[in-house]
Every structure is written in structure tokens, then in C-alpha cells.
Amino acid sequence: MSPLGATELVDEFFIENRTRLLEIAAFLDRLDRVEGGARDFRMRAFDEALKILSGPSKNRVNEIQMLLSDPVTKPLEELDRKSALGAYDHWRREVTS
Amino acid sequence: MKYIDHHAHMVSRTTDDYQQMALTGCVAVTEPAFWPGWDRSGPESVEDYFRQLTGFEPRRAAQYGIQHYTWLAMNPKEADDRELSREVLKRIPKFLDSPTVLGIGEIGLNRVTRNEIETYREQVELAIEYGQLILIHTPHLEDKYKGTWISVDVLRGYPEIEPGRVLVDHAEEHTIEMILADGYWAGLTLYPQTKISPQRAVDIIERYGPDRICVAGACDWGPSEPVAVPKFALEMRRRGHSEALIQKVIFENPVLFLSQSPRFKIKPGANELVPAAVI
Image (tube, rainbow over the protein chains, first blue to last red):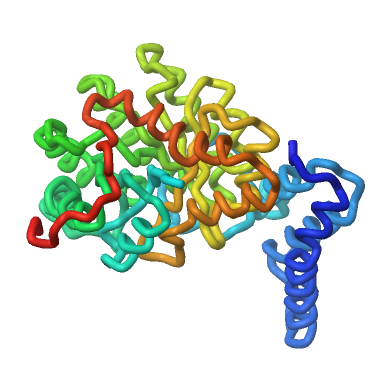
């Protein structure tokens, strides 16, 4: 548990989290200004994550981690690329399964 | 304050970084064998890297009073290459008697392919055969949950492994429980973007307690922080935690885990400077 109470946590950490909130807002506005086509699965996941953020859950970070994760425990048959992309395409899985 | 960074790819860092680490209280680093950001041309190149890790790097760290230990492995980013992996694994045993080698690591999965899993199994078996500690890399971003789940599941097939001699690294909120539940140590690697922040690492300490958890910077050739551990300590202080708890997480815990290798010994006065002439 945190030794700090709610008021102390807000006093100490509000400003830096206000900054993070505005960064996300600015990123979404920036996308809206240039948007030409459909958003890909990463931004679909991002939009879903924003719903979790504003919802009543008390376990938001775990829920967002799992939203962004490959939930399947089956290995890839062959290497497709070296690096991860940051979000799992749950929607493609729904279509192909 | 003194601390140990159990996961730092110092071959990718400058001596200025050693200086910053020393100035902030670092007394020892352990460096897992990893990918340089590009694929090596063959096993000879990897063997040269092992020579760098076991010979040159400890001397470079000693200039700043930092003890340097290492782990040897075929790294997960190249582990899908079975031919290269087999050749590298043949070359590891001759380095295991080096005085600064703590175990086999970082082994594990990247994109979680069948080839990577096969290489991972062979490295687990190498560690068992030679009685070595194990350091496990878990994949990044969307592959972390799946890769951690399979890494832990594979270990269950080796009942001879003592879980307390294994550290599963790069844990995050959605993987920490499965690591701790099976008795392994968990590593929280403090990274600007793709791993865990100091703030979230403190959350994990607050939720799960400090036992069997270590923190590290995992600094390497990409955007990363050689002084991430002191930033974690600062965040712990901002959150009102005691100096005793901070010391447990950043010094006593890594000593407890790493001292299971008879080679790991923190020297008294470890952060005193030695002459540059040792290089």
C-alpha cells in the first residue's frame, strides 16, 4: 500500500499526470487533423483503452495490458518479424477464427 | 544509498555512464548477453562478445569501482536461428569457469516461435547440466503475456530446477503474478517506453510487497537510462517509503539472489576508485 493518502497523492502527482493527459489529448487531435483513411488496429485498441480509463474499474492497468496483449498461448510456426508492434490485432483474430 | 543493477548492457554504454552510475551509488552490475541491435555474422562474432563480457568489461567497470559480472547465452532475438544457436551453445561451457560468470542468461523468447522455444529449452538444460543460475528475458509489448506464460510453462517441465535460482525479467503488471506464484524471482526493468516506468514499478512493490523482486535499468543501445535505479529510489521516497525498504529492493534483494552463485561477492569499499592503468 502507498504510505500516502489520496490528498497527498493528488498534491504530489497531479501536475505530472495532467501533463500526460494533455499529451494524449494532443495526440488524438493531431491524428484528427491529418486523418485520411481508417485507423488501424493499434488505434482501435487505443480507443478501447480510453474507455477503460474512464470506466469504473479499479484494475485499469491490468485490463489495458491485456487489451494490448496477444492472449493466445500457442507459438508462431515461423518467425515473421523481429519486433513487436505495441498492440495485438484482436479484430483480425475474430475475422479469421 | 548503494545499489546493484542486475541487468545492464554496459558494452553498449560509454564510460561516462559508468561514472554516473558510480556517482549515484552503484557498486555492481550484472550484464546478460544480448542482441546488439543487428544480427551477428556467425558464432565467432558471438564468441568475441563473450570475451568482451568476461575480460574487457570487468576491467572497464573497475575504473569506477563498480564490480562487473555477466551471464552468457544465445540471446532471444537471434534464437530463432537454430544453426547459429547450436554453434553458440557449444561455445558457452568453456567460458563458464570465468570468475565473473554468474549463469546462463538472458535466455527466453522474442516473437515466441517454435524455434525460439527449442533454443530456450536447450539453454535451460545447459544451465541444469552445469548447475548455473538462470536469467530469463521475457518478450516486449503485445508478446509479453504470451511469452512469459510459455517461458514459465516450459520451466515446469524441469522439476530439478529450484525456482529460487531463476529470475524472470522484464515483468509487468499482467505477468508478475504468474512469475511469483511459481516461486521465481521477478525483475522489473525501468525503461522510458517499452517496459515499466519507475512509477509503475513502485506500484508493483506496493501491491505485491518487496520479496523476490529486483529492479534494474536494462540500459542498452536504445533509449534507456543507466541511472534508472536511483530514479526508482527517488520515486519510492516521493511516495513516502522508508530508506530500509528502498535498500531492500535495490541492494539486499539482488545480493540475496545473485549470491547463490559462489562467484558473486560484494567487496568492502566496492565503490572506491581504482587506477585507470588496470585497463
